[in-house]
Length: 325
Image (cartoon, rainbow, N blue to C red; front, side, top):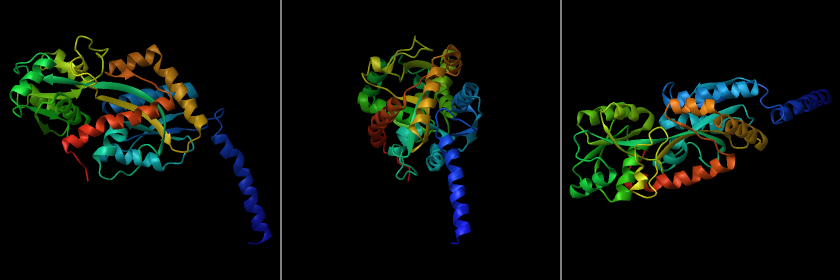
């Protein structure tokens, strides 16, 4: 290399230093548009929550937060892209109970390490599942259901949105913690599963609370328990399953993370903004309108929760025999 080329390259490297440091400076971040990868198709509760978050963060920071949909493989495709992204604070990703609690045990091979490859920022929203039964099933409470299942083991079925989903695994967890026996009927989505419970083809289902509660209140199915540790704020009249089965919990949650290596200052700055947002009446009411609870955590709390939730789901996944190769 001649002296002229060496000088040119050295000058280019020096000129690049201020830009690199600026990208990592919490006082100046974000200096451009932030992309939020959502690993699902548009529509549904995930899209609803993601749009609300992007709108609020755009106002809070004066820079655009935009959604980039990357669906497929149970959310693994979009989350894998997040893991491979530059850790500069400009690619953010939507992570869920699927990608960061269920899939690590369900899938034989994952395209990322759900702990090592990410910098958790904050949880955003949570909602439980709702156990509903066909109106003709002779039970009105969780204790009555347990007694029926023990009296006639293997006779009754529960429907779900598919093998290895949180709805399926809620049923497996229920079986494991109650010592009961019922068989699983997977459907291609929660809607068809609920339809067959209403029609009596299947006895019961653990449905997503935002979707199933409306059908229960319309009298089409009978609600008997929520999968949160305590009664859910949008339906306090429905007991928690944990009131009968201590410790029973099967929560669906959504949150955001950066790729591992993103400067801690940026992670903490965004997390603090999300915590402020989720504490506002505006966000709490908007999330509640979609059936979710606005929920924020510090990066440290969120990282600890992810590890705990992975351990919580693993026994039910193994007991179910569900496996994706």
